[in-house]
Length: 418
Image (cartoon, rainbow, N blue to C red; front, side, top):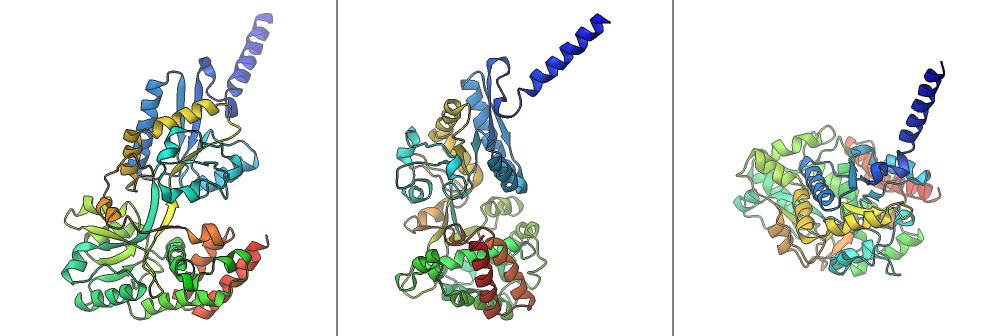
């Protein structure tokens, strides 16, 4: 009996010891350290590249393991729970919200070697006025509009630099293809694609042109939202003139690659994987990318984006030293190049050069300014969903452009007050 009791106590103690190795003290078994890393990467090539860099790091740093998690669509909700519990991963992706959402949880990385090579366009996004650097960028986003380069050449269409030129290009594609090519394709079943249209064009409409700069009014909350109706009018005009896909409200993102590979799409909103994915299906289709067109006369196109896939260090991590060591390793030119190329985004450091599908286009438009995502700077949390929903309602005919701007205004006021 005593023997059985002793065995029972031993098992309880053993279980307790195992439980104590989870959570914040995970990885200290056998004297080693396990760093938890959460990433928003979803593409298999991206994941493999990050895992490959982590494997190489582990080989050079015996006793340190990297536990990588790819939560996908659940990422934001998982991180919100972790922030509320103040139990963050050692390393985590700030996916565009380094300062605004995750700033108080991020350790300062300004003393790290790679920061002197940070692309100047990313400094306002990842660095504050005190000099604090919030995250290491694996790459940088440059969102614009993707197009079928061969099709534009065939129809003698110059890549548009203004919204007016874009609209004319869409009409030309419709007429010269006799309706066999969709001028501008949207996966409208995913309201996020409609929100992206509004978000990208809000920048040239309200920010980049000096004569139409509404930054101050947007920050103060005094902006006249009736001006937003202009974007809704453009979208509705595209629908009425049959310049967008007829099935826009049911079209799914999964359809994009096949349609693009068949040469049935002229333009679409930029997604990094569409180029390489289309090439796998049809190597003869060459896609290009342009910055977001200007709206006002005399203004220039601009890239929309900045921060994309990043990695920050939790300031309260028990393994700050090891976490920073991993970032320094990931920032080595060969590793930075590997991940940037796997994601098909431009590199974020000036001491490396990534060769990806759109490299020649990024080089062609290298002097174009990168503007931050409109919603991240000027809109309260929750407005992305509102932009997408009102976009669907506009195209379904249940809202007019004026009603869209009124609803946007009401929701802006409501969400800003929360």
